[in-house]
Length: 202
Length: 233
Image (tube, rainbow over all chains, first blue to last red; front, side):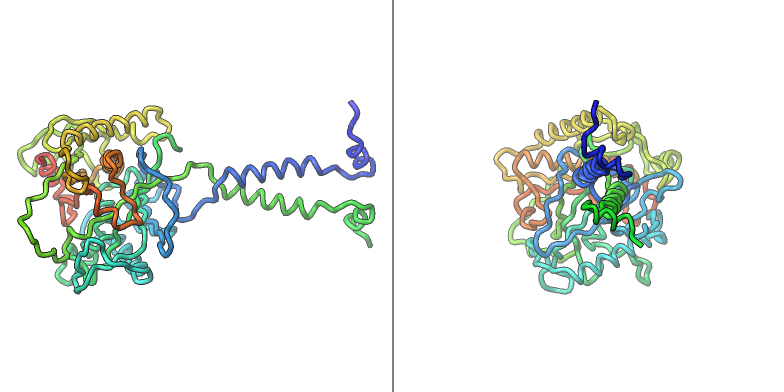
């Protein structure tokens, strides 16, 4: 079989023909650009979210809305981030099992972060007309909190996070040692998303 | 001194080496940063603000105590015991807090003694071909029970509230699957919730997770929680 003329010409004077190589590389590049997704740092790989049937791809955020992700770990394997640890976005996780009153550091740090976000976000009147403890209508922030909990996280940790979000408990014990009293002023987050996956997804 | 690239340009050829360098770098970037995992989904939820510690609105009429449908999830195979202490002993012997994963749970609806078993192993294997069927079974069980409790003619908002009461030390997956089943039942009836639309709660039936039954979170009170859950109607 005769070789194409342009190939012969290029190899005759000592130059390699790079066109087939470039074709292949372009195809591979195109494949990765179209098929792959750049990893989002807010999402830790060690978390396997529970399977559900009706979970949907989250819709795009509305104007002035923001989304924050609370990662909760569930693995019991050695070397992994411990079960029930909490991480804010891509931050280092707070190891907090919530087994006793002294072990609530993770919840306290989470609430501190939430307070900061609340102060910076736009707020609107509660449609239910609930009254704020200090007077006036309760103000809700335009923030969606995505609770991305591992399927093996203990249920009570997710419960506690929900209570923290709606600000119905104060995780920082006061001088009397009580920690389960509502915080004033109340800064509730009520718009949630629970991360999940379809049963067949990997 | 003339370089190879100068030679190439003189001969009328374009020097492709810089372009190949760039392409290779781009390729390397995409190969290292891309993932082929499927995209995660989410279930929207809005927490109620009118059930907490805020001062309630003044009632203008006689209010009936709210009717709730409890979806109770407890460790499987646990017999009915007489005291909280007995449950606590069982818990201390079988579950190391924060480490041990309770292998099997059972789900019942309200006071109905019929249960469905939830296997942690089956529900945790990503490549399990039966996973979809297992989730489907749980949905069917909850949907059938909710259909029995349906009050004909009443709008969604006025149907009995659905509360998922799961034992604190069980895995989150059980509670979320039950919550999803209740929500999908409501979606079939037309009650959808949009996390960004605070008004969507005003027309939807309440589906919520029960607040912690053990308020001070002490593991010594897990027995008390199991005692309560087993008697929940």
